Length: 254
Length: 278
Image (cartoon, rainbow over all chains, first blue to last red; front, top):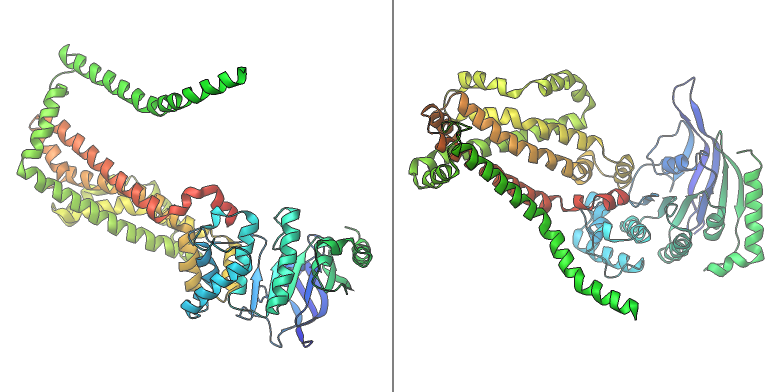
């Protein structure tokens, strides 16, 4: 259970030319254990999204060493990624959108469709299978996107501010849902966010990034037991962690 | 009490007002049509416009219906319809293929850019005499003309549609281990489809123009040829009848393609919602 899912050593990313380049990430070394939910937290421009894309194998790093399940990062079935926008295709029904990974990965279609319908029920969208995305609210669209990323049963979920565009109440609700589903399906989750509250609420561990250049300024453990609920945020334990994280973020001027 | 009365009135009046609202467009159009018809009759009666240029509405109507009773009319109609449809299909396929190539490959786009600009600026009609010389008086030259004039909107719209694909959606596809082929067919082409179809609509109208222009310049059959012949014989009522029939064909083609558009790219009418989703 505690074997490392992700190990990185001195990861660097420089955008632009050799001389005039902008350093987006510098010296990121961290380890994330299997089965954990962790957050990469920081203000915009701290490189947290870039780091996530590097872990997904979608952006090559400029330097450093990265292992995801012991292998160099590349897009594969074991790693799923979710974005701030649902990126549902309007020409596909809800269930067809969830089936997209199965088509692309050439998984057997009939069992996949059964699984897609189960997952839609799991994310609370029972009965919406054959609707079109534009008939759904923003929160429901992200639920579909969550079902889609779960379809190929990945071990690792990389989530790039998946609920960032939603209203606060919907976001809190979906965060708890996400934690519940991750625990239920035994996933490792890496969540990128700029919300201190969201990071502490959902994570076992918060990695705090600071900008220009993007560096890891601290790691905060959140030993609050699961399952958590909205009442968790009222506990002293929770408040202490939030204060700690805020302290780390305040160390560098924005 | 007062509100009750007001509400009742509103309830009674609402359907009437809605009906009046729905009818005012068609009614207005009918009034304008009748005025135009009146002006036409007046112009012919008072000989403001010479009868050789504009016959009376009754004569044109008679010519219109008589035309449909003549067997040779259908031969000419069939020739033109074939030219238009074959030219249209080839034009769409050619436009899509080139547009897809230029949309996917920036190298191909850069190399062909000067030619695209040059061809876009060229009034394609001037090619008609060349095509008649090269491909003869038969259907071939008209099909080529229809292709030349109709493939361009599809090309441009396919290219621009493919080039506006959401980069983040591409990243999603890549994270799902999608091949370039999967990205193209499952995302890019589908994303470009509303734009492509807008081009297809334009090119259908242009294919009709291309075929008729080709027939004007040199042909042995077709509605454009028929129109031209009647014009030389000063059978002006027939000229107007054929003109109306060509207009009718244009309308029918447009209605069919509109219907196909709504069926095939059904999601694009959800414009705003689509944007929010993607």
